[in-house]
Image 1 (cartoon, helix red, strand yellow):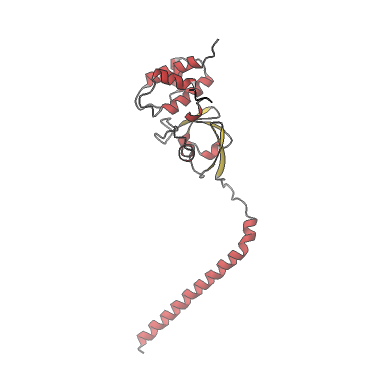
Image 2: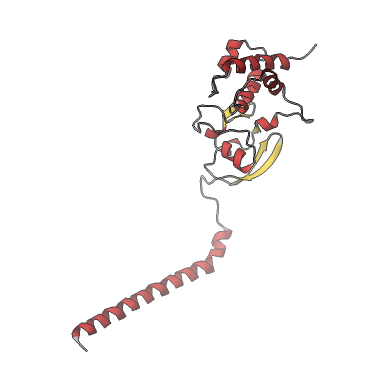
Length: 209
């Protein structure tokens, strides 16, 4: 056998032996981990800062159990996990207000609020305004009567903003309504009819004598 062939054979054997040794060592460590992991798992605790994924949300008067990722927004959870598609995604950067929902009675942009932030809170979406017998909320009825929107993509957010406004100020002036609704944008520019609807909603919401 030539010298070159002998050297090649030695390198091959040496390399093969090394690989076998690595595999054997790995198998030993893996086996040891398997044997002792039972006690480790039994006594394991949640890592600091860890967030429970399976949570209960109070949405439109009902408790909804849902699997939520740590960085998941409320808008994503409502639309894609709970099927409440009335919450719209417009800008996805807290500028247009199409995703507006009520959290404990206050307006919030669902696209910019983490779902884990609202555990224990009362969440209301546009679907939750309907009465027990299917009757429209006074704000919804006012929008319907005044044909307040053109394409209506922004309508759910505006309507919820109107509800929050009237809960705080039942008798707003048109200027006050404009100020209260300034966090919502209408891409059709139908602001005059929207404000007219808001004033009609205030009228409908007043208690009758």
